[in-house]
Image (cartoon, rainbow, N blue to C red; front, side, top):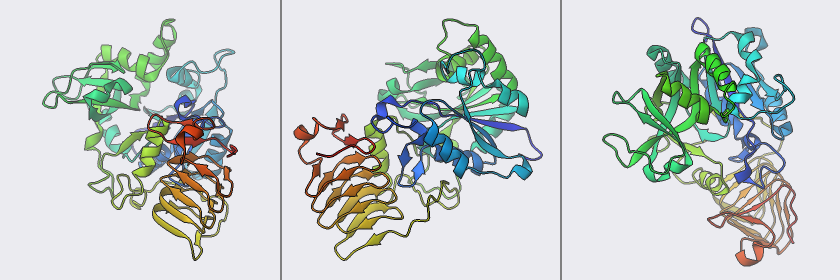
Length: 406
């Protein structure tokens, strides 16, 4: 921000994403395709760049090749102005070990902070789907004088065991307690059926962050995690404040998608978030030109084409697709081919999937390069399919990259 405080963005993108297997068998979770043409990391990077945070380090570790390649080929900023988005792989700067947790990842990358000398450090996660103007959170953080500000979103109290839960003080802003995935936390004052869940987005003063990291690294019992270790520490010191995501206003947002945020860490959550995209009034609107989500245009693919028998309804069809069959309630990535007589219903198909003539695919996620043979089926006979494919709690089938369909 020219003329304002110096701000460094750090994106935590080293997650393995075990619950998204088989989609993460060959790539880091932030590199997983979402919404046809995007990668999950594109959402946080778009939010930061749209919010004028233009010096960003993306910390990577697990199977990071496709993620590193996507960042370096897509996210090119103006070096003339000193702006950058750069992947930073694990470097073992503190000894022969990989990152032990998200806090340890930043501790091992302190050279980035020392080199940039920011006043504030924005630390955001890399694998959530949402729009947010970080400038509003930063303004509150600076005005409050807090060591750290954590973004919270209201969720039903019954879902609290899936999140880090923030208990605000009587002023509604200070953080009284930070509980990691509690079974039975207290509800909010005036709204007892809801709690504030941490979004995994934090803004620190640089001093508070560096001091907390050094204190944490000396604690042998620590998990060295931002949410599980650093936030409780700063909360106990009276240094933590809450930012209510519900107060964030993004240009071009509709009443329908205002405040939308999804953790797509499981197959069911990933699938459901795709279904949110395709309704007549989508719960998350990819077409907000006032706050765009950026990604790589990819190769120079031709526009999607529909032959005489090709039909699509409630669907996102990416460039390079060829539709000769019937597609409904589905999201298709670039290069997907649906042959004549094939039926695709309620599916997420990644790059270059081919659905053969007369095949039927229902309620499934197919990773790139999967080839469904003519007359083949996926999602028609669940008892049979369980022998071959991953299946979620809600019955969504998932096939890994290039997995063979018998």
